[in-house]
Amino acid sequence: MSVQGILIILVFVFFAYLMVTQKMPALLALPSMAIVIAIIAGMPLNYIFSNIIGAGAVRLQGAMAAAIFGAILAQIINKTGISDNIVRTAAELGGDRPIAVALAITFAVALIFTSLGGLGSVIMVGTIVLPILMSVGIEPVIAASLLLMGLNLGGLFNVMNYAFYQSALNLDMATIKSFALAFGIIAAVVLLLFIFINVPKKKTVAAWAMSTETHEEKPRVSWYALLTPIIPVLLLFIWPLIFKDAEGKPIQIDIISAMLIGILYGILTTKPREIKNLLTSSIIEGIKDVAPALGLMIGIGMLLLAVMDKTTAALISPIISKILPTSKIGYVLFFIILSPLALYRGPLNLWGLGSGVAALMISAGTLPPQAIMGALIATGNIQGVCDPTNTHNVWTAYFTNTDTTTILKKTLPYMLIVVLLDIIYVALFKW
Image (cartoon, rainbow, N blue to C red; front, side, top):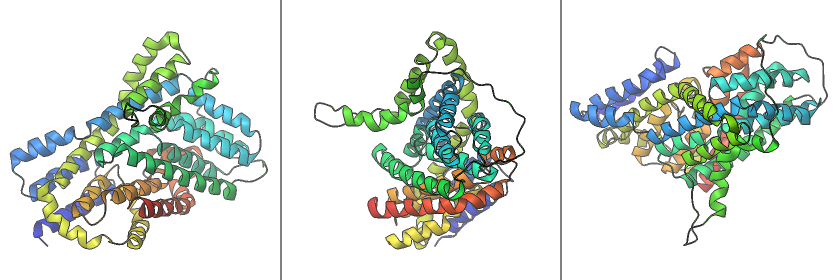
């Protein structure tokens, strides 16, 4: 066990502390960590500049491009009123029955967030969804939890995330889709459990402190326009089943092409005469919305190259190999016990330190790469729904006059069930 290897682990712990305590944002912490690790590993200065900083900045270029196209699609869905119409249609189907409303609204949110992302989209949808849920007597903290769990369920099928997994975790698309489908089914079942346990069966009169923020109702759109958010998902999952090449092999469609088709479909089924102005404004505003994520991906790319470099791997693999489990039972216990470390930008949060931790685990060679990736995608359920440091959790708590800690306590037991079932699935079918 080398001194350099121990120092690298300590660097991880130190920067994790800085991010958890919010003394340094991930945007700065990740590239800083990459450079410090490269220096400790003894990499030459010119190598650090070219192979860690330079190459790292574009390491996730595929995911960056997908993020931009995803943000453009989200703008189209917002600007054309598609998201508003999905939510209001769901509310009409639910009537004044709390469980029916909760089911319709939450799964409508999931449908929308197969393409949407970012705080702006959460606010836009939340200002419609939360008052509808609370108007039938659903408690504010339950309404807040339903919004976040619906958002998380949709995120499991958001193809922009697939591009990130593909680039950052070196997963093939077939593996990503199998994870998404299985994890999505598990999350949906647990969401149903949450609804039937926590939502009243009959409408009650409820009072709550609600934001005075108003939301302009968008015009009605055609029923087929409402399919826009899931067009990219359908293309990724259904297209290969229908179209085959001359040898009978499935023809895959890439993520960016799928989202571009979704963008054009959304415009042509709603405002085809405004295609030029709508597309131009969506590109400009979409890039602006996704800028923080692009900055984060630059840092993640640098960290991945610093940690996965053969010099670093040789130093830390002996240490990590002593910690990681070697059996399937140990694997399940290890990750379910440590899964709360996905909270507060912790080491199991893939959109932060977790990307580097994943690289460390892979370099150790103790567990199959797909098992590590599956576990970290699974623990992302906890981060996505429960993390008090999420900006969408903070806004949702404010709007419903609750607090992020209350939401954490209400949702964490259910998300732990999701993670446990996800990890068992990986151990049984992906090991």
